[in-house]
Image (cartoon, rainbow, N blue to C red; front, top):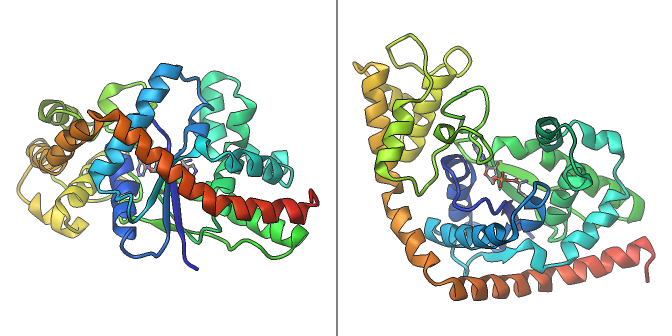
Amino acid sequence: NARVFSGIQPTGVPHLGNYLGALENWVALQDQYPSVLYSIVDLHSITQPQDPDKLRNNILDMAASLLACGINPEKAILFQQSQVSEHAEFCWILGCLTSMPRLRHLPQWKMKSKQKNEGSVGLYIYPVLQAADILLYKSTHVPVGEDQVQHLELAQDLARIFNLHYGELFPEARALLSSTRKVKSLRDPSSKMSKSDSQAMATISITDSPDDIAQKIRRAVTDFTSEVTFDPQARPGVSNLVTIHAAVARLSVEEAVSAAKGLDTGAYKGLVSEAVIQRLAPLREEIQRRRADPAHLEALLALGSRRARQLAAPVLDEVRHRVGFS
Ligand code: TYM
């Protein structure tokens, strides 16, 4: 009964961290598991203020990007979270099984409520909605980057707590980490590459032009040692470039380091940006091509959402029954 589930926020076009940390793995898993669901999690995205027209656009940009990256709607159910209202309803029920202190230390709240001095109730219960996403399909495997591991632990806890209260129903889903667990910001290698970074130079979008990619990598923060080595603790900046290089050129870290032999970090940056540019080149055009037909994208998401709902509805019915609503 293996089932893969994962989600991505509709931030528009994905960045290199999304691509290497999650999406590549998503594509590979379509062929390895009998049942696979990928969701554009628009309910999660409104935990931060969103302009409605921009959000509408971002959802379609993300759909076009996922298809261009290789998500195949015949192998994976690709759907929009808000179109399956079961997610929100189940979130309420799971929220009633979660204590406030359990959520206080989770990363989304800690980071984003600090930036704003206060956060919404939605931001606070964000991980509960994520648990609802996962459990609603009785998912067993969840491909994510390292930053999502704590959220996954909450989903596992909630599966246990629900089973304890209401009888065995949910498996404990396991995280599937890709070999590139975490891509760091190019401006501050102590934090992850993130779409919400205020510095444009910190993040590479998968549709960035070759010039932009080269400039961002050229200006990436490194250190004062010119030799290229891999040591994420002592040399986070250079090591991040090695991680990126290895991932886009499909090399091991050792192979990437030995390709850098004899190069100083400046010259190595040239090599890394060439590799990134080459890897992303086919995506840019394909995203544009897909994005040019919004009606098709909308129809695809509507179909995916109907299929997702067929799986979710009986599970939520069972939940309602166990809770005592029927
Ligand atoms: P989101 O939209 O922030 O990111 C989508 C995926 O990309 C990974 N990722 C990274 N991996 C490596 N390095 C980075 N710098 C980097 N930045 C992002 C994330 O780990 C993620 O796998 N809460 C989730 C979305 C979500 C979800 C779910 C995921 C909602 N419901 C259920 C799994 C299962 C999020 O905001 O991901």
